[in-house]
Structures are given as structure tokens and as C-alpha cells.
Image: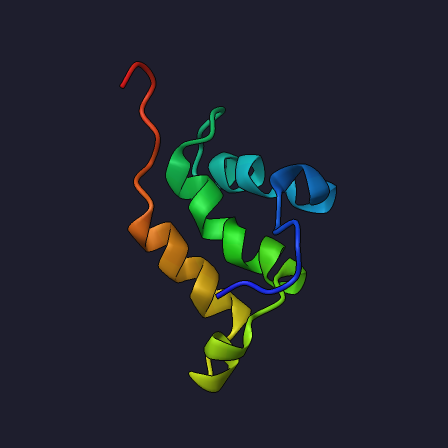
Length: 80
């Protein structure tokens, strides 16, 4: 689905780094949970995704592709 090379790595998005803790703070928490990260992932990463021909033919946009990945990928659990 993804075209290009390296993909969208979090370490390449310093502007998006404060977004998840900001969402946690708005919820009254001093810590970040996986849902905080998921809620900002698409807006932060969408402009860094180059869709392949198949995705473009299906009229998918980067935001929907990112959301699909987030929905399919389980949240890592420490010690599992």
C-alpha cells in the first residue's frame, strides 16, 4: 500500500511528538496511553505517506490507510 522507501517513522516527526501528551493533559492525565498516540497518529503522519498505485486506484487517502493500520495492529503490551 505504501510507496516510497523509508515509511513514516515517529523519530521523523518531531512536530507531532508533543501531540499525544497534549491529548493526555486535556483528559486530565499526566501520562500517555496508547489511545492518545492513536488519536493523533493520522493527522501527524498523513503528509508523510506516499500511497502506492493500488491504494490510489481504490481512492484511499493516507489518513484512511493509517487508520486501517492502527485498527489492525494490536497495542504492544509490556512483558508479553
